[in-house]
Image 1 (cartoon, rainbow, N blue to C red):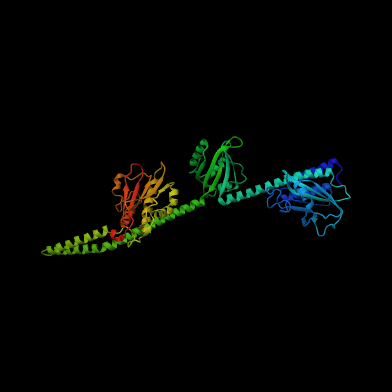
Image 2 (cartoon, rainbow, N blue to C red; image 1 turned 180 degrees about the vertical axis):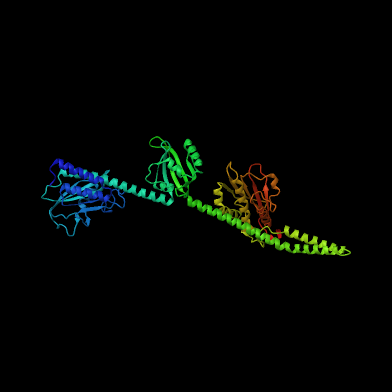
Length: 549
């Protein structure tokens, strides 16, 4: 029987509301709802179903329930639920509360070992509605001899169904929030990224879990005082960070700054802070943004830079070694002749009387050997290897772009803007691709070095090509400090350099390579800052490099 004591009845309903509202998942809500409905109505069997696929609720409101919300609970536990076709539209579409009383009707709960077909039962079908959408069904069975499913009972069950619908929605939002939080935490961990919000008035910061890991701060410290954060910033980096913070806050401009973080155990991380100042909920100026741990990336970049420097140093040493070997090999013979002739001259002059004619011949041989040595030195090849150039049909743009691809990271690291203007009408030329790329590589690296020492103005590298008079002409212009007029006439001389660590071989080698292709390399005059080198290449040539050098 239904509860007769009004006070006890209200208390029972209140407890039912509380149990339903406290459930945190779909199944928990459904179980609390069914238990309350069975206890209040004194029904003997029942079920709550939220989704059974397309046969029941799939087309009612697909936006409400997630794929994980196919929930079916019953008492006693059953195999499945069958909504009779005769009342399906009334319950799901028209959202009617339907009561059937037929001693010969089968139960909607399929139960092979349950009540026999035709047992006298009253069935209640009550739609669970949220925002005019049917999201589930409450099904109850009661014995006909009981006074069941009165209007008062249906009203109470409808109120419980309303609370269940709200709790289902809360469970959905909580599930989505948990999933979003999980992916956010996982993404921040994988990407080594932490989020934060710093109040400039209170000097307190609230941050994500990953932020605590990056700064090695006790996770129980919430919010984090600015002094704790300051103690983790490298002492050499904090003045610069403080200056950037003040400038960004005064202008309410975006913040983007790199600095180092020092843990208590001495571990040093490199981080990049990105953020934006705006007014928070309290009206205070706050900085909201993310912190990214870029230590591994910086370490890898530095390792790459060191490897390139070691490789370049090894290449220079190898070139010098081969150059020294060539000098020793080529000059040894004439120098030996000079020594022998000088010794012979002394012997002829030491005779009594001195044999002037033979001495004169020895001096002549000395002069001849010295001239030969001079010719060898002046004719030494500036390139490490000699031999025949490997001519092939090349596109000028293809040669240049191959070099720019190699130097992409160096250009980005130096904050240099690259501008290209290629003449697409230039025909293919004949040339040695590796040798020509060496020329472009040397000229572009010279431009990068020239712009790296400039602290004011934009850094821009402009490479262009054109076809004039049957020749392909390439110009490489930078916005560096330019070249001292006194140095211009010596630029292409071997062993002359304007760099503290330079060998003075680069431009000399470049000019010889271009000359070996039948072209020329020169420095253009400019009226503005910067330097412009240009070289011209004919379309056809076949020259042995050893004939030029």
